[in-house]
Length: 367
Image: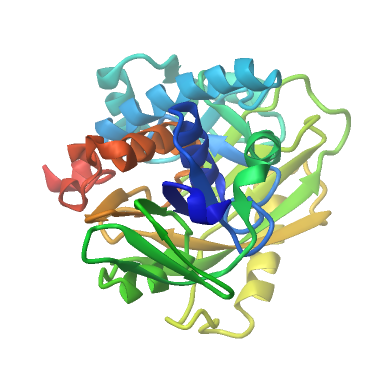
């Protein structure tokens, strides 16, 4: 019962589920507030890219540790959740990020030439610029991970929209939903875009930029390869930055370009922006990924949140019994972030590296 749980988790995406899972492993009672289907908002879709390459060596360490927890989860749930197919990066950022990865250690990574690139990723048009292969990266089976977690945590999910949060005089957290008011000893807010309004209502404005993103999936021409690495193509490669990763079975590839800015109320600045994003992505596939049929078979639109210091930035705010997580590109770190949020909620406090003043994700820019 939600009114008997010690700790509330607001948001049933991958971070909320990971946090709740870690809390239950520690024997805590938990209520997960989610207004829709768990994992169907910003965590929705079939896949995510797991990469070690970052501009901040602290993020490399975080990814390396998170990879270990993903492997633990595979043992726990008896299925593959993170592929072993690797991540290929191309473009001007390769040399900088490769140096950071080699300095950090613990990741099998190195430069590859144009012939090796063509052999590893035959879908890609000819490219003779900088390229590297992160052998320990791969595709996160996002839907499988969500289903595995909800299979365990289903009884703790409260299907309610949280309207407001308030830290009480004694430091507990009052959660108001559409049909109830419940007080919990502690609460963890990790509701993606929804965290912005709830945090502001609790007196903690978050410096979060919001956007919307289009991600299209295309069929491969020919037979599915046994291995299909993810692709990170930076500025100056085939016209604009892009990423791509394989669907289960390697018969399709999902491709995304840049984000689309929105007004503060969530409306599009340009009404045609999403349609134009689809056209741009189709054109990108035609010139950069000739191994794909340029007619999409699926499209997913999703919200994006990021902190001002870097698109990969992550931070946790704390006010008495309330913890608030914000950032971008966090799916790959979710199992580890869940454990750290759980420890903080159980009284260990927020680790120094996750505090806003640490600017996690932006070490390169702050040196």
